[in-house]
Image 1 (tube, rainbow, N blue to C red):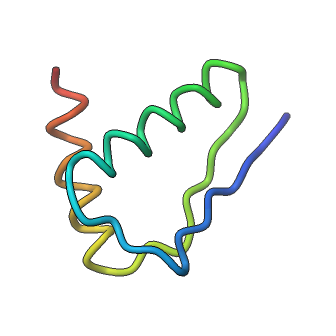
Image 2: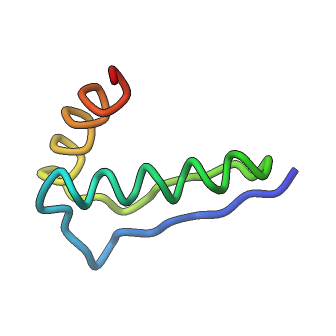
Image 3: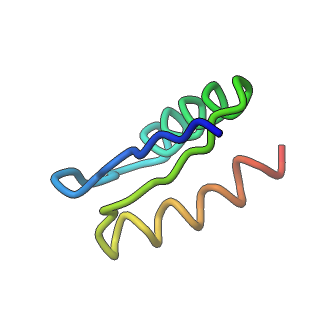
Length: 59
């Protein structure tokens, strides 16, 4: 099984466009059978990502 880690230790997710871009990247990896692990999100980014993932995935 292939796996990739996307590390956000030195980054901050600011808005819905950043979450959408991250989701697109994850989806492209997963379509190729690659497991994605997102690490290093700070607390504010984690909350935003969780909130917007629900919104983005409901469409």
